[in-house]
Each structure stands twice: as structure tokens, then as C-alpha cells.
Image 1 (cartoon, chains in turn brown, green):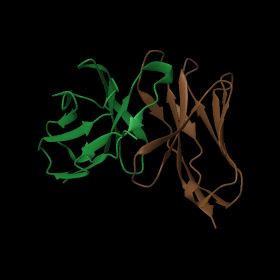
Image 2 (cartoon, helix red, strand yellow):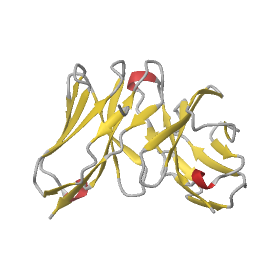
Image 3 (cartoon, chains in turn yellow, brown):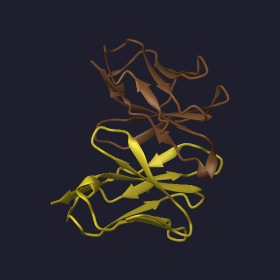
Image 4 (cartoon, chains in turn green, cyan):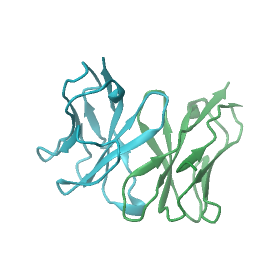
Length: 111
Length: 115
């Protein structure tokens, strides 16, 4: 099983749509979870951390289900500028710092 | 807003040559990292560095790789004898704390092309 697994997409959605991405991770001892976005040939940019209680930042909502080892990202009211690859990222080992990245889910928001 | 910077943005080198990639982490950050991303693939961890020593490294980070913090601001990745398969984007990252709340911030990357 891959350490961090995501549906690669692509997801093509119209402006204003709601879209959800899912991610699973292999290590139940994983400590911290993040969503990054990556534009073509650019660096990963931190979108949000994912907390056990779930968290929201504007149009973005992240959820964590530790029992199922599952993380989600919901984007409401999609904008053209949301077009990017969304990376699910996990810090898998207590005390460690190295991040494990999923392959990313490509989103294109269509006018 | 403080950010991680990297130089050069693009480096072309011949197989067997040494390259040094440079990074300036965010000034109050204490933990530094190198990652790489081969075109079309996922981002992969190479090495983490804290208190002037390597704290963790991946299987990719073999004897051909080394890291150094030569002064109070720079953090470098050296590849001693480059191979074709070293062609990738190399990202530097830094964080102020380690562990569960250590959000890592990435530099813009250096695209390394080995010919």
C-alpha cells in the first residue's frame, strides 16, 4: 500500500461548483496532516493543516478520520484561481519531520 | 511575508559534475529540509537538518549527496557526481518547530538538468 494515496483526477468543474478530494494514508501512527497546492512547475504551497476536529478556512474545509486513515478537502464556490494540483501530505512518524506526499489531484475550474 | 529563497532557479550540468544548490531558509526557522520532485512524479523527502547536523535522511540521500549550513543564513545541497537520474526540481523547506505542528514552507525550487 502506498504511504499516501490520492485519486490523481483530473477533476474538471465549473466555476461555483463544490468539489471534494480524498486521501488515505498507510501509517496509523501518523501525527500531522496537511493540504498543499502546487501550480505547474512551482513549489508546494501550504493550503491548510488538518486537525482532528476538522477545520475551515474560508471556502476550504479539511476533515480527518483517524479510524479510517482518511483525509478530505472540500472546496466550495470554486474559482478559476483554484485550478492547481492539490497535494495530500502526511508526517508519518512521531518525532520525525519528513513529509510524505501524495501524487496530487489535478483540479481545473472551467469558466 | 518572509519566504524561503533558492538559487539558481535553473542549473544545467554534465553527468559526473558536482553541483551545489543554495537555499536561504526563513530567518527564525530552525529545521531545514531538501526534497526533490522528478518531472511528473511526487515530491520526495531527501534530508532534514537541525542544529548543524543531519537529523534524518531517505534512501535517495546516498554518499553522493551532502548538506551544509556554511554560515548563519545559507543551507546548501551538494551532489558530488551527478547522474542523469538526478534531473529534477529540488525544493528547500524550513519550519520553526518540529513534529506535529511543524508546517513546512517551501522555496521556489532549483530545476536541475543533467545532460
